[in-house]
Image (tube, rainbow, N blue to C red):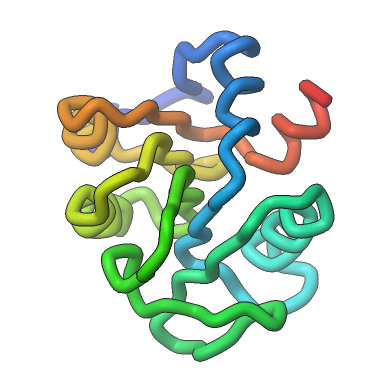
Length: 145
């Protein structure tokens, strides 16, 4: 098993009912969101916006993505965030989650397809957050709705 704890295609143990309820939350911060069309970190948040979600870009390189103000880090976002959707390499997730914990009100940490960090998962769960990993928030939405 790797340092980040994923050796096979391992996904979280949340039931479809639990995942479905997560989509009731409307404010989604997307870490690593990209302005480049064709990249999952661009078309996935675009899909969420089209479905009525309030997407908040988190990317220190850009001031605005898809017409929305982008923030350097999660703790810089001045308004409510319910779900943190992470598009970063597994080894880069821990500092993102550590920063996110500083912001009150986040309920769900969602690590996109291929992304898993056990230490980040454990820290988030200790703080009472739900953790989804190695799943695409777009594909799960399409599958369940």
